[in-house]
Length: 525
Image 1: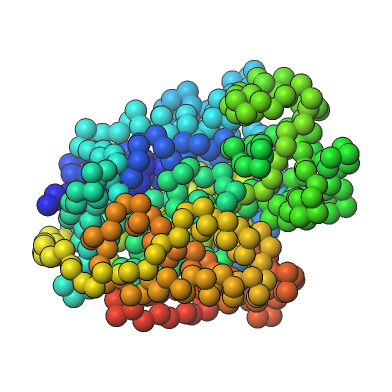
Image 2: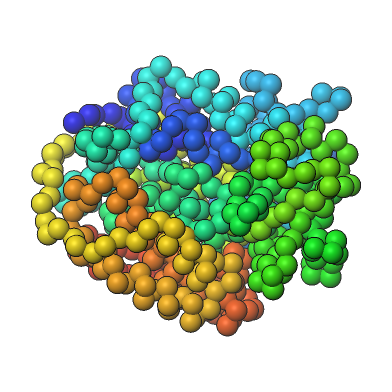
């Protein structure tokens, strides 16, 4: 048994930002299932959106965010985060040489899809996530202890089930430990690895969302999955992300004959919102056509995009030919654990920040480069709140490892989960495909699991993937319209009369009862 004031689960930008801003009189533990530097944040090539240009303004940034989110956004949340973006960037820029600058010493501002202004701040060209993470890692305080290879598998509630007081963890050798704390923070990322094609780190399998759901927390907007249009596609598999900044610099999407595919599809053409670009590419791929990024118009490509160049050369893509083979893949979850802007969930003592959380900023589809921004904002705001809130002592109740009935269902291979999610709950969905997936998931009877203590990390990973896959499938089946990252071929249009400003909440109470609720969002137009 280990006690701490604050326990952080995850090691992305949101987690690191939180750790850096907590007062040093707090005892803080940061648990990560893999290594400190293996996270989606660390892999992020894109930048951070902030309205700091001469002709830009946060109100313009907000307008673009609402448009990309198809007006499903929580207006007040989006407004607060976006209007604070310039100061967040200036604060980091003033303390370290993190971001790229132009010849005049001003921050370089790039363009990305669905933005009307150049407002993307980068670091190292296409190494923003890595450099920002390293900047924060260097500032981690001495009161923080990082514990790698620590797989969180169950949240601990008090005997009344009214407050989260800890988390159970398994080590690589399958030994178990219980961490108790006044504040338990899930910063575990999204669920991109539920899909066959994904830009996400291998560790991003929806664990935090499943943990929160099993504990009885409210989960929201799980049908909204963003599929990034351009993942490097070699020998039938995805090899990594090709940043949207490449299209921002002038690359265009073409078919095998070199014909541009976004002409006439959207006014922004290749820089249209991601769901539109992904769906267009998907149609070409379905017909057996390979789609490429034509980069011939970009001068000094290797200097501008060193990491992408290294990725392509590693997989023997000849950049001198000017074409990079791509395919869409899962990239970001707009939904997640329902929180307020600080990160508080529906369970006292439990918080969620970063991609694991849903503040309402992104709506039905994330505007490019708003994710690192949200992580920086939430991490700082939660730290400021925890630094001032009175810390009531918790009563530690050491639970017995439950014996329960041994669940006897055979778990599927991870590859099978990924293949079926991509096929049935992917870029294009239908009632038939969703019901087929729902029936496949029901065979595992996850509700019969009475204890998680006796499963291996490998088995727990599959269980959490299945739980999260079920949340996505059920929400996608319930929303009978197309909006943002959720596209139903049988309901191809937005249904504003029935669905505008409405969200689906999913919750599993301790007695295993489920509830669904459509809620009006706070957006006003």
